[in-house]
Length: 628
Image (cartoon, rainbow, N blue to C red; front, side):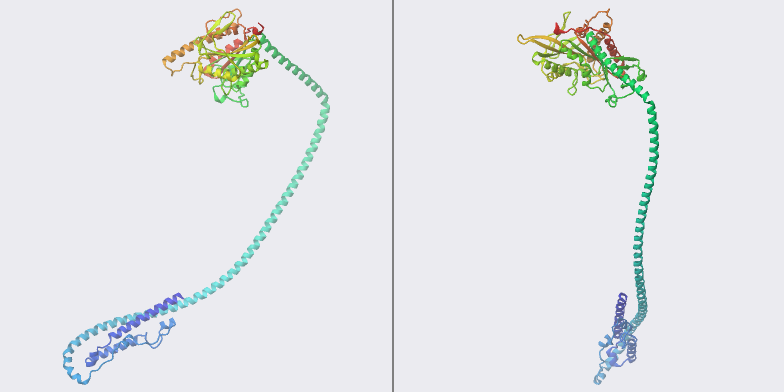
């Protein structure tokens, strides 16, 4: 319909253009009125009229019949007067009486008008030819458009037929598609049913297989039970046959157990007798506490190394709780140690402070009974002597734990009759200083008794007071920064805890019961190359005094092994102060603090040799001061 409307509009436009061209041509061919009146050159006028009539006759637009364009558009076209006819003026004829008057003037202008009219005629004739050619072209285009319209009409009809056929085909395909969808739905339903049936069949097969396996297992169990029954019968007969032998073995085991129990009782009694004999004979008890310089070796009881015994760091090997080995050659493994030692107890690095104190604290209670008890902490620099003796606020040392136990024992005996006095001194460069009063004191040797004159004694009631005094003394003590540990002591620290008994309340008489002496001895250190010359001189002087006192201290143990040699405690304030201990007036316990540093293996060997010599010394029974 759109193409037909476009063609109809184009046809109307073409008809309008053709009509306008025809009217213009009629106006061009209209003769001048004066030519008609004068009758001159009537041939030209007749030619113009004839051409005009021919042109009008040739135009098909305004014919009495309906044109093709009007027929196609469905609107009939009626014959209407053209523009030329509407504007056509009637010919006026001059009257006879005026003709003669104007004859002369007409003759004058005739020649001029004839030339002008001929030129105008030629121009209009050319214009008419051009319009005629244009009309011919428009007619040809009109004919082609009519043919094109007819062709498009036929194509439209063909397309309508094809559309109808396609619609019928689509309807048929829709029906077939509906049937296919129904079939697909039926197939899906059937497939689901088939899958469900397959699953049910698989379940049935699995149940059948499980039942088959269960049956086979039951059959195998029956066979196994039968074999076990037969085996049990054989075992029963074998047991019956060997019951007599087993009874004899059981009786032998009972006898062996009784022997082991008696042996264990004998061992306990032997240890008790040994400890009792050591107390009575005054044998020096020696303990060793090992400090590891390798963080990876510091382990707990659950993951301690088992290579080579309880502890093995490469330089030191602890095989049992009483035996250890040391080697000084770095190229040798720990299993090839060249020195073997045995002491009362060897503490590995994982043993805490309380365990160490419980092992060495047996003689401490003798202080309340009237005996003097001495504990000396000796070893290499950085071995942990001060830590074992004084401890830290988080982990109290032997001194704090011993003071706590003495306070507990005195309270059990009656707190109104017992008191504890504490004093602390320092030996530095052979000078003795009271750390509580910060004044120099003197060691007085009367031949029978050695005591410190003018030292300050502070009575204590609880452990907090003792810890405060210990912290004050530690702050006043001489020390130096070294490589082996953070701080190394450069003096000998002695802590005295005197147990005082009040014998008469009315007379306020006091008796000295016993004294607990704890000595934290200094260790040997090497010079630090970063120190100045004056500090090096002071360091060398301190080292000389320390080395002298420690050499004399070690020589006493070596001399005490030989009864033929006398005891010479002079030459050092340290040995002078410890004279009563070596003369048998005290229970002596020696705690050796060493490290597993290969660089200090020689020093460690020297310290262990001192402990080995001390174990062989018998000082004799100490003096009970309460019985004097």
